[in-house]
Amino acid sequence: MIAGVLVENGRVLRATAGLVAVLAAGTAGLARYFLRGILRVTRSKDYDIAVLGVGDDLTSGKHTTSDIRTVQLVATENSLLPGTYGLSWLDGSANPTGQAIVGPILSVDGDFGGRVKGGRSGRAAAGPVVTRTLVDVRAGELRVGLRTAWEQYAYLGDPSAARGLDFLDLDLHGDLGAYPTWLLPGDGGSRWVIAVHGRGATRSETMRILPTLAALGLPTLIPSYRNDVGAPATVDNRYHLGDTEWQEIDAAMAYAIEHGATEFVLYGWSMGAAIVLQATVRSSRADSIIAMILDSPVIDWRDTLRANARVNRLPRPAAELGLWMVQRQLGIHLDDFDWVARADELTRPMLIFHGPEDAFVPWERALALAKARPDLVSMVTYQGAGHTKSWNVDPAGYEREVRDFLLGLG
Figure 1 (tube, rainbow, N blue to C red):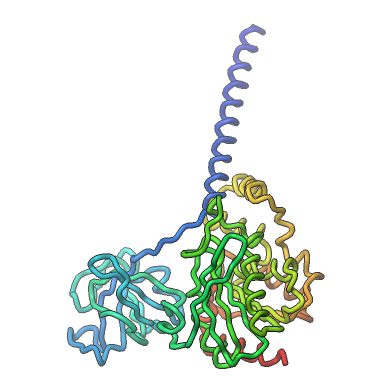
Figure 2: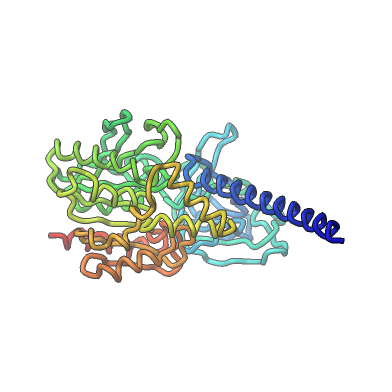
């Protein structure tokens, strides 16, 4: 009897051990997947928003190019966002060919699971349809049947094509090679802005605010950094969360100093803000930095990575293992990227834009930083603003805040 019990217990123990091993393997697999998703350099664009109608009167079937003022789109998470955004589309050969700017939502008709009329085409479309103001068609023809990509940067291309701004195209030289960079010459003064885009983004992320900086006469550098299109790639082809990318900002400051700069305002979006913050404590030229503007900033990578794990419904054990893997893979300690904990090290005035709807870089850490350093941090929040979308929600207000902050530096 005892032997039988021991045999049965042994089977249970083996089964339990097997289950634990399976769960551990699954957790490790999810953690590795999370690690790849965070660090891997990927670029993609989804043309998932169909154009269902264009014109002043979407029911008459009559419109001319000159009187287009509205656009009717399949409703998606993006096309239902409040504010000003862009659309882009491809030609028959899959080449980028068209761009448009859309403004506020005018109406939303139908509901998910229902079927509604599809604009001028007369075709039915599943789900709701959103009608928005059509601000401008900048290139190509916006027509029914196009499948468009949502562009939160709104304006695409270089500063001249996108915003009508004079600029120079140059290369900055860093430890990995030459980095394509745009320079807006400004009025030739000694206070320069260096604008740094975020993870997975391009230099076009800066396009929304460039006219404001140009109007103030501020020379502005918009550098690429390692693993960007056209820039040198790292051996591992992975983002390093600002731990190495800050060196490109250092190279930009070196170039600017050679051309008359004595003061810098660093401007960063998302991971670009993490890069900027690293530059303020690691660059030998940091004494020349007088202020920062940060949009949806990564104030604490540990908090940000956990938020991304939640968005992707990753189990907590796998997320925590993923955080450990990130540190091991990059040879960093995430405590070094927690600026709430390091708040006492900050010495420069800072303007932060961050909205409560940001699911990827939660605004709570920015709020905590603002509370820890009210002497330095001014924080602006727009309801409805998701990740790096504060300008989109209120362009005029955003530009005014940036202008007033820069003029207030003296």
